[in-house]
Image (cartoon, rainbow over all chains, first blue to last red; front, side, top):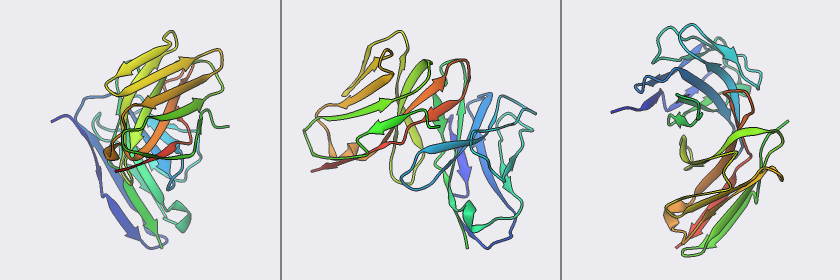
Length: 112
Length: 111
């Protein structure tokens, strides 16, 4: 079944740890996105990719990094987590010119 | 600056009533989309309206777009408790592939 997956769904971790949030999609979409969303607030684009080996920074500055080695996989890494990174991280993908985006369920990250 | 702002920020209604949410944006667009987000979950695409369209329907949803006022509205008719969620508008800045999301309207429908 075509879908977009994120793991883990919830992560509680201590300051200074390195973490990787996983995002995979089985729809064959070229474009993928990472958003950061604080509770009850709007989404902010932090990274996007137009295809393999393409990564761009979004509108909101982020200390995270991303990679796109395979079409279906777009992981996000924080080298040293801090409490200010506590938020929900949403991954999305899209295809074509309509920009309709398909979202994963999100990862809720808490850094203590 | 934020592209989209939504009004109201929160809305509480009874089942069976209609819910109207408004979105304003700042720059020229190719299209405007509405998304729904259940608490703690990802967003789900509801409907897309192109810049050359003025109104679009999908089931109990009705979307209007006024490009001269840079605004859109989402009407949910005969609301149900299951419609309780946050609703976001999103615009693509003309000439880009990125979406910019509004601040969202939190809708609560009481049984």
